[in-house]
Structures are given as C-alpha cells and as structure tokens.
Image (cartoon, rainbow over all chains, first blue to last red; front, side, top):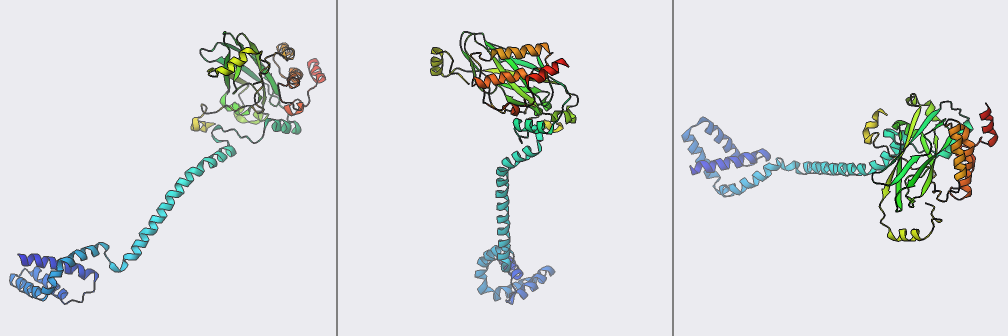
Length: 287
Length: 93
C-alpha cells in the first residue's frame, strides 16, 4: 500500500518533470515501463518493477515530495522557458487597459465643451445659435434689403404667481408686426398690497419652435423689480422677429405668437434695504 | 424639431435673456406721454406696429434722454428708415 502511494507520488512527479524537462534520468524509462506494467495489471511485475524503481530511486525518494511541490508550482507556469513572454504580454495588456480606462474618463470630461460646441454649431435640441447679436442681425437685414410680407400677430399674456398681490396685465392685447421690424409693447403692473413687493419675471413664447426667431432686445424680465404699495408702473418690451422666420418651412402655418410673462415673488429677506428705501422717495431706483 | 423630445424637449427650452439687458423701470413716469401716444396709435390703427413705429422711436428716445436706456443710434435698433414723414405717408395710403 505504501509502495503504491509512494509510487503514485513518484509517478506524478516524474510525469510532470517529464513534461517540462528533457529528462536525463533513467527512471523515466522505468516510469514508462512502470506504466506499461500497470496497464497490464500484472501484479508480480508490478511489485518487481516497483521494487526496482524503488531501489533505484531510494536516494531520490526523499526529495520526491519536495520535488512534487516544486513541480506542481512549475506546472502552474506550464513552460518554464516561456515564463517571461507571457508575463510581459499580460503586463502589456494591463497597461493597455489602464490607458483605455483613463482615456474614457478623459473623454467624459472633454465631452462637456465638445457637446456645447456641437450644439451651438448644429442647433440640436433647440439650442439657440448665438452667432450674432440682434443689432448685427438688424444691420445685416437692412443692408440686404430683405422685404417681409407676412404679418404676424403677437398676442400678450400676463400671469402672476399665486399669492402675489400684483395686478399684472398687458397694456395692449396684441401687436401686428412683420418679421424684421422691431416693435414695442407694454405691460402694466400694479402693487395692490400695502407692503412693497419685489418680483422677478420670466417669459416664454408659444409655439415653442417659433421661439427661436423671437429676439428680445430689451425687456424687464430676469431681474428683480420692486414696487411700492399702490404703485403702478409700465414695463416695456422691445422685441424683434427674425426675417428668417418667413423662409423657414416649419413656420408655414404659424401666424400667431403668444408672448407670456409670469411674475414670481421674491422673498423680502433684506431688511436693511427696505428700511432705506422706505425712508426716501425712490428716485435712485434704476433697477 | 422632431428630435426635440431629447434634452428636455419643449419643456427644456430655456428662455434667453434679452440682448441689451433689462429696461430700468420708469418709476417716475417720465416717458408716460410718449407711451400713451404710442398706445393710442396702436388702438387706432388696429394694432399695426408698422404705422406706429415713429412713436415707439420717440418713446425710446425719451428713455435715452432720461437715462432709462443705454444711448444708441436708432438705426441700430431697426429704426433706420423711420421718420415722422414716412409714417404719415403710410397712413395716407
């Protein structure tokens, strides 16, 4: 039994050594013979060959177990002679993959300005192409002498946020304007409460796709406007519809634009400011 | 745009601030007469902006005079061909 175990051990170790080494030991020949003997299942031969084997490799048997361990380790690398190329190959792969990771991360950072320039160039997703100011546009069109014929009705809408005691209405219901003509419109706001209220407004233009051609030269939106109690004020809007509106096929059926303003209340957190303003007449107020 | 569904679509269209900024509010009602003139003109002409452009021009000139608007050449604002006479001629047509 012990013989068989020992022989098995030695068999495995010698087999492994046989794989990666051109064996110089005569016992390999014995091993092969041992295999054939094993295969023939001849007990006598088996024992005899084992004995011979055992005898010849007695000095070597002590080292067999350590050799086993070592050869097992070596087998993991498979071929001792080709150890470095595979390692460098995997190292190369590692460098390449790391570079890919860093490349991807860098690309995501670079994507922000790239995306912005792409949108500016193509106007994708409704981004307005700010290539020229309104004044430049006006100058360009007046020089080229573009004549516009379509009359567009611009209607006005005014809204106030809930709970805000302002009366906010458009002073005129509509304005008929041709593209390429700058036009003026007024909104009236009145503070109906007994305390000064500061509001901020925003606007939008419907239909949405026509909003691209609606240029506001000057208005009262996006900045805080303060009204004293009982004060009524007129707020002008100076706008301009791009003559390119006429040539755009998507705008074919559009003859009505609605400009809608909404006022939102700004919370009065600044007590010092209110104290100063309450004392003096609002001469200095040029918001 | 048909692809307007992306990037928030119509809802995501952000309003653009005005080119020349904000009109300072006319708290002292200094340009009220010009404003009234313009609005009356609009009412009488059926809200046609074309025929009242000269009055809007005077209103803006008033604002510039009273420091409620940055001074600028009127032609730059699209009033290149607008004079009092022009509008009168248009009315007569």
